[in-house]
Image (cartoon, rainbow over all chains, first blue to last red; front, side, top):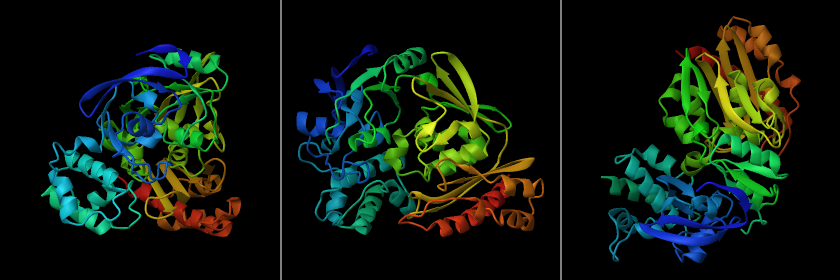
Length: 159
Length: 275
């Protein structure tokens, strides 16, 4: 919606995990805090809040993005997928199951972001090379340094 | 992080965006936000009004103008630079875009944001200086075009001033381009970068060694039209002495001077080998 007067807050509508929401947001509110604190979608994590760690990764209008570097008010009219969109009715997706099978998580803090990056990769490139997998999770930091099993899990899910 | 209170607008046209930017003191354009939102968190920037450019489709996309010439909309993302067929006319653009940060940042970060933030470690300023790009800026008093040599003014400062908007980047015909970098980790922040473009003569620009990209004019003069390996290497000798790079935790000034010569040669030879 075009709006020509500066505002400090605004009612936005967005489609989040297939559900249309309408919400008043402050212009200064980061999207990650809107998702977590207003919508209670706490699967999206805040690791660093500086755009480095990727724990807050979501899919924004079809593109993988870090939700700590977006304002909630920018999401007016947007379509967003968060980690909560993966598992349905308690059933893991093959990618999530593969993370479990390959012990691709230790503390688990980075996992939602890793899964979103991996899902985004496989949606766009169903059989990636090892190098492409590593490049795809370049923006996601695992501070347990469990990268080898994460790459293994993504590779297995790609098959 | 809670940001300082800020006002927000999302204009539907370039004209309205420019009007809003010039009407409101402390207004800043919000492009991909991959730099601006972070510096707002750190309070290193505290704009009063954000003018969100996301609806300005006229600022997006890449158009071929022939013989390798391109017009690039500043809202074009790094990912588009990588994927767009037209950008394939100058493959260096996609190659350099692939070095920037990570998938998430490349999906939102924009060409215009990269050049207008003009962080000395940014990839595109030295590349666009080497490619002899022109920058079209629209302000309240109309449109003007600025050469790459005049666009980058200082750290975080460009010719696109308050109340103005970068609307187009024009890359003249060409095709022999090179880029070489020593980075912190693979594809990390640059310690020194060098870009070259050959078009009759050579244009060489060094990044990360000053507030703005530094043209290696003496090296360019010595190369003339002789791109033989020996001549390019000889031409780079002494380039480092002409630079005044910073010393920091990643590298001494002396190392940066040395590596600038090495990278300038690599960039020119890579450009020569293309096509």
